[in-house]
Image (cartoon, rainbow, N blue to C red; front, top):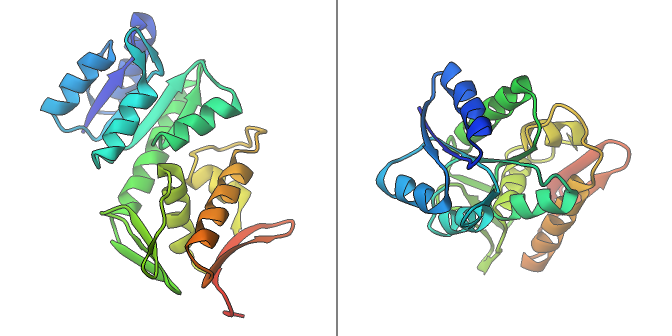
Length: 227
């Protein structure tokens, strides 16, 4: 498997590369967005490990462009920018995971494994449908009837997770572990923010499906009138 490591700090880059190589990855190292762009143009990767602030810009713009070009390679952001707002920006730009620096090697390895599991799961079934709500994993499109629902990459991943578990109650711990790759509660409202955004998108598309809060437990996506 091949990984692209975009990091301009030599010491940190060597540490990340060592962690990846110890897990069997072939790693291409880039120190700038320009170098990363050349690398990903000429080679296919199975994983992107991206620092945010590079000499020639913020890697979130680089990632947004990849997603717009339908490059869905799993991507994890490693950065010193660890505020809730920074994490939300990362997820909205197409990041699959966001790990603030400094980080422990064990957590980094666990995040990568979880990220790849989620990516593999997403390839198993191309179309999911609940009521008039239809999601296609390969095209990464969501429609309610004839209405297109425009979702950020993280909202799409979140909806896919719920639709694959129709009528199941999804706990916060499940979302943290399976969608954000966290084994602990970071003490932020990132789940509530993304649930709120996704619920609004679904309601704008149509009313045959609802994302409800199960008080004290979690959330559930269901077809209206299913009870």
